[in-house]
Length: 425
Image (cartoon, rainbow, N blue to C red; front, top):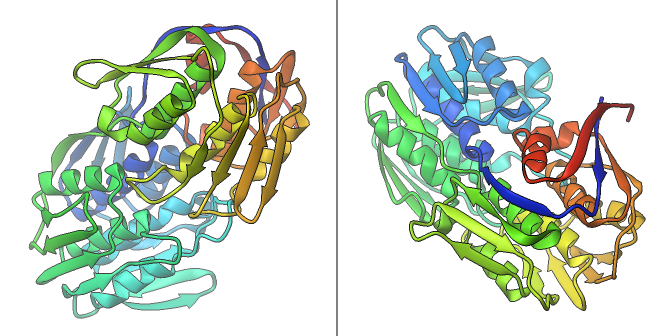
């Protein structure tokens, strides 16, 4: 099992290209099931989550070809049973439910795994599909979905306990594009990744209005065709490297292939914390360098356009060595603070209580063997290790490989001293 050795203290410099969005790619890949014609998708990141999704599509009968970030998929002859062996590895595999039941009238999908950051139920996904005519049952760990009389458009409210559901919105939108009549999704997620999926579906011939708002209207069509689509840049990867620029550079680092409109929350918090953020005129690149007088601040996660929960761990790592007191409160996943115990092993002063972390900045962090618990926690440990004295050993690297394409190579490109080695858990 791979682990990462980070030799801290070397300033980052230079520039890198940001990969395509992992969270946008997964539902877009699943949406290829909606047509029997070929779809071509560019800038699909080479990470384990997209690899699992392509394995699922292949197991469902799709013809899949992949090269240099481009994926070609033809779903001409598919069947409705998604295998447990692959589905269990990744929660986002539930994205295939909507397209399968829309295209074939039924689906059998194993209850997914792949997530350890608290309760992330799929009840809203099932609620949405039931509302437009699907019958749902469970048997032997599988979710059985059937729409014998077809899907019928309806107004559906997807409001959840902790706000809108991104994948639930995706699933319902994919199912509704082939339903009879009009579906209206109220309390829809409005993340950029949902908008990218809508753009992909529209390019296939779907009729969708309102993506990017809390109310999405989908008018069902008879069939969809092939298309050619480029995935948006990964705003979480970009945000992670923006934090790296603030933590571990002196003259700054530049990130290319970004979208300024997707990075406003991260940029604003970095500026509030005293760092420098400079976007190019067209917003496609950004340079970040540390400020002369950094200070603590407060983060409250919220559904888009609020501060993303997927970025709070990385900012917690930055606050660990930021003078003063910082507070991070996660209203979406209150249990998502497992990285804090590992940062404390490196010398951080963090108190976690009831969905909040209070971080008192320390002068320096030290190296220690640490263990990644989930994708974004892994990124936080890497960021802290770049600043720490000595060599930090980060175990369970497979977590970070789920969502960051070639992170060790990109860090090396920026001048960091890191090495991937084979090791035990």
